[in-house]
Length: 223
Image 1 (spheres, helix red, strand yellow):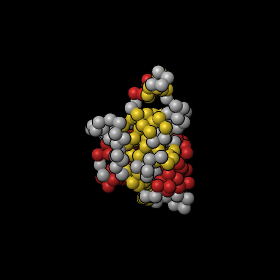
Image 2 (image 1 turned 30 degrees about the horizontal axis):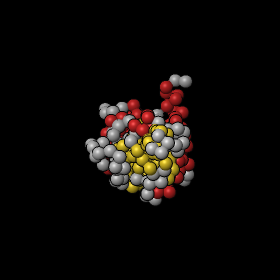
Image 3 (image 1 turned 90 degrees about the vertical axis):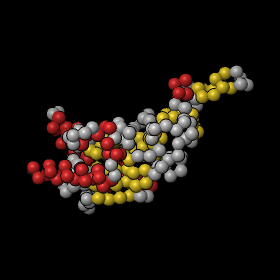
Image 4 (image 1 turned 60 degrees about the vertical axis):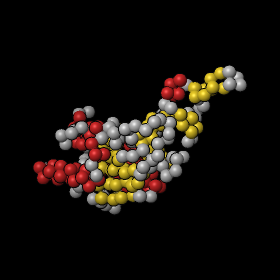
């Protein structure tokens, strides 16, 4: 299959997903603030993980597969699939923006409320922390995952192995995420900057929307 055909097929999946969220008409913008509504929308977006790509605040990205409630108050977990490392965030809202019928540039933006650090590490410049969850809500350093034990049993004079519930997680204390169609020109650095640098997080919602809008309308005018 040619690259062009792959991108067209992906865009078709993306537009089909948008029509599932907005069955009557795809709006220019929409905002969800209720956590359950945010989860519902993200799970529809992630229902076809190969159709989307989510960019993180400090760089990098994942194909988002869905989201569930977190044991942490007011938080959710975003996943890229089975056995993936979940991202725990405290969502403030979920925004959607589109530009006429040019859905290759339509996107979702998750803005977050501040999430207190776990206290596992000293405060540093990073806005996220990768840690080991022993049991739901019980955290240790990331390194215990590699050691495969997290404590010492003095009574039996042996290391205490990680339980089956243990897993790696990433907690984002702040920042915004954007989700585009995987075939979107945004994913291919067609704006003159690298989207994997977390550049969207350096702009407000309105600033970022303005840049995407200008490019989207420019491409429509050229058609």
